[in-house]
Length: 356
Image (cartoon, helix red, strand yellow):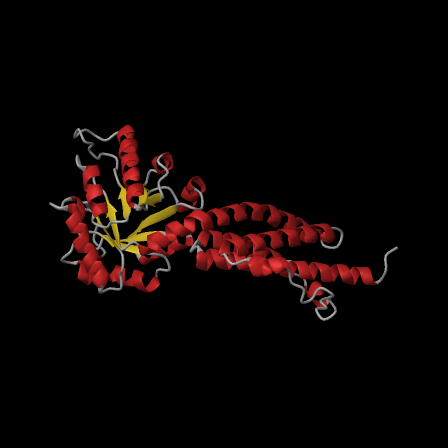
């Protein structure tokens, strides 16, 4: 037999679990935002939170009775043991999933739409949890190293590719991008093949691992996956970052070339980990590309919430003017690859960067 108290009790129960689920999702969202710098994961968690918020009916809130709740103030010792962010995130994922299950069970017959949405969000959260935990485990460490890297070496085809990169690593470079576009010439001065690309990428990956440097591949996600690179760098005409993220997973790095503020802002919305800003000066590496000058670098310094690397004809002599815009990280090609002593060139660039 149904008593008059039961409907109010169910409304209170739904209100409490909507609060619990939304609060837990906000914890996850803020970790993705401030801890991981991952706009794509922020968007997914925010969408779940807002979907539940739209169904948090006023009748549930009117039934609220915090003062009369027998569990108010209860805590569990395990809450004090969560010292690491990953433990906090994992606990809140579990908390949200449990709350959603309660909403499913008690929402049926009272609010079928809420019950259905709770089930949909719960299944979506299972996938989000995996992505967030992966990003927290491996991705966070990579992103910390990315933020710490002041000098980024982008390679160009060379018969001495491995020797040049190793010398740069000896000189202190800790971020390397392998770039071998279609039409590039291989060691035999013939158009480079995918077999050669794979061989070179494997060799550079091993070198970077030996020196504790991050290794990224330009454009070619397949090669990045094959050699277990730390990520990829995408041009404006390459695969969309969202698709790259699906293929690479949440823990890998994704960079994006940008030539205007609107492209930088889109890269942030797309969840890119960093952007290239340039070309600052005219450069044979980007034939036909008009330089953006220092104005865009200033804009990036003021607007970018993710690391950005000024790039394009940067060398030791003009580096101070680039740093004067507010940039703290730069990418170079010829300043190291065409230097008589790549290791010394890297040291001199890092000295200027360190003295900024």
